[in-house]
Length: 255
Picture: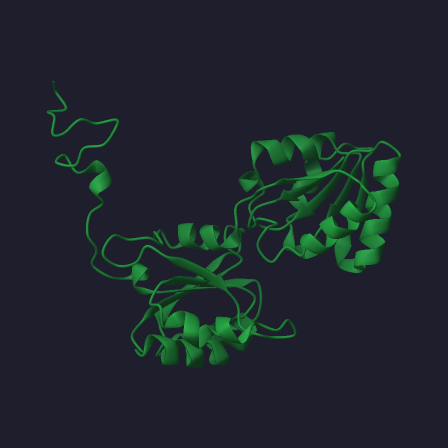
């Protein structure tokens, strides 16, 4: 059996219990290079075969996974964050389907939630926004024209922008055009949850200069939207006048 496991955004203890259990049992582990903390490897069996996929092609990875699984081995493909987001796992699944090899995905904590936790913010604030957009700007990987950052920003939702910090000027330019404001709050979180995590807070007016001054060029989440710094309404979930199936109307908590 092959397991695609999300290792979390950085800190080794943010992997799920299920993911850690499988990692400890694995015969073969293929991990995503420097994107995954090597602290995870301390939980592998001493006799486990460990491969760094940073030095491998898709064909190399598939050859090892296929060969080892057919020998009855438990194979773990350890990805950063949550493998369903920019994890490039679908292409691996297609190949495994083609040769009828079973697999399972174990979700993980994504870097966008790790980044939100780092700045102590909630993406979905009542009266501000109830939508989160996960996206990136086009680089070597193209982005559909209908998903251009300027178009997405015009929605006014909270945004988490992946894989784009090296193009911060381009990001800011598109966001300004989309939001039609320069004072929109923005946070850059480099290596969220890692020991050397860095956080920069600003607005669309000054964030590019701050990022360049800090020399942040990779491994950073860009979070943008009024959820970072704005007034908001309290949730009805805990409002004493709001009833739901677990709480019938207004009650005195001392009753």
